[in-house]
Amino acid sequence: MEIQINPTFPLLAGPGRTDGCCRAPSLLCPHFPTPRGQVTPWSHPGGVTPVGALWRLLRRSGVGGQLWQNLERPCRGWGWAPAPPWPGGSFSRCCAGHPAGRRSAGPLPGTVPKAGLSCGGSACLRPVIKEEEEGEDAPGTGPEHRGQPDTGSATMAQSKGTVVLAYSGGLDTSCILVWLKEQGYDVIAYLANIGQKEDFEAARKKALALGAKKVYIEDVSREFVEQFIWPAVQANALYEDRYLLGTALARPCIARRLVEIAQREGAQHVAHGATGKGNDQVRFELSCYALCPKIKVVAPWRLPEFYQRFPGRRELMDYAKKHGIPVPVTPQTPWSMDENLMHISYEAGILENPKNQAPPGLYTKTCDPAKSPDTPDVLEIKFERGVPVKVTNTGDGATRSSALELFVYLNDIAGKHGVGRIDIVENRFVGMKSRGIYETPAGTILYHAHLDIEAFTMDREVRKIKQGLSLKFSELVYNGFWHSPECEFLRECIGRSQEPVVGTVRLSVFKGQVYILGRESPRSLYNEELVSMNVQGDYEPADATGFININSLRLKEYHRLQSKVTVKQDE
Image 1 (cartoon, rainbow, N blue to C red):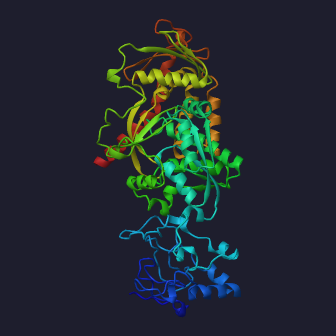
Image 2: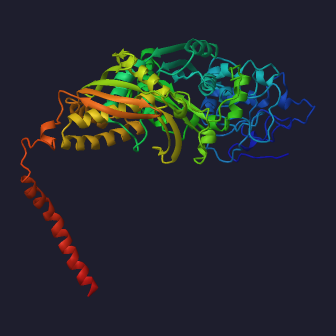
Image 3: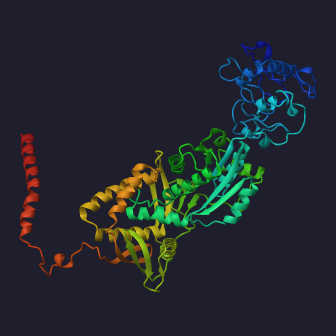
């Protein structure tokens, strides 16, 4: 039997129990030597231990309160561990193998929870100070040490206030909802309808069944299009030349409403289920802090007590089954997906190997271009100030003019023809490269259409500057700085540049491609007579001689001097 003596209070230290509860002795442990099968005054299940009696004396004398402030909070069945200022203390474990004095992340390897005393993670931390002030049992003398049944650790967690959780209805955020309740939070679930395919009523019932105090389900699809997607269309936003920013645009939209609900409910905390390796954690939290600087963010996947407790999918599934959280009956796809009105993304799992080709059954928003219709859809898209305001299908005469209906219609047409698929390796803001597969059907059509009408109506030098602004805008959006002052400034600048971007683009959608067929605009800078090879117009060809001579002067001088340097080096 191991014995550890605390030099500060040697008389209060002693060997730990041998019956599997305290794995090592520690300061003020009420479980003194108790050989298996024997009952001694040191740990009599029906009485107050000497340590407990001593504690009460200390507590009444006023000394105990100060001692308590230097102790970590105890778990049921735990030994006691001194806080860092007290030297020589042992690091004991509870019956479930949790280290004392910290919020646990599940049983440690090689430990088996003892029946009836299994800890429920950090929820089993007992607010002893409050209980003693109310005249309840001293440490080591409560019902948990008198053989009475555990009534549930979640009810013992100290209240931490209200948290608004960005809830998806999936396994991860459902487990997080229950886990937050274990930590002592009152949970309000917020599920944004941002155009994804979802049974929202089923998600509401599920969240309430899991213990959510309230559930908000709000349709933000229209504001997502008008306030987030349209500015990106105006900017021709494209991250690293290929990614149309579908997820990056959705996060600040969701976060904005998340903060609004927190403020409405008087909640001091918000929470999300983004992983600790991705971009979304940054996007969510930068938006939350920008919109409400005093808000506190709970990010479980960055908390050791959470990610050590759930190192993999299996542990999460086991937790779900234990707490009655519905789990998928059918096998899950070996990759993760995130969908909104603008796009759907696929990553992780088998896709983490960039050499692996996307399996045929992966895509959900677009059909295989090889199997798409053999007849193209010809569309006319009208723009005002760089924003699409009307789409007309020249084949069947169908038209859409409201922002949301127009975007949904383009999604349908592009998806039917397999438009909008990309498979890329991108640079995450957190510093690593990742492989992502994206479907952005409507966004792809609008990118090509807007690019064309902008080039038709915008001055060359203005467009050069605007292209630089668009590059920076795309980077800021990708990295999560939508609500930053610099991003607001860029949106204003880009919006100002779009005043002349008015007109209609005619295009064909066919076999995975978008083909521009023509364009017209009352603000066009194109002069057919001026550019015609058949009409001289208001242009003197002889003037081009001087233009060429002036521009060639720099090149002549450069190469003349280079020739001198080369000759000198040869000598």
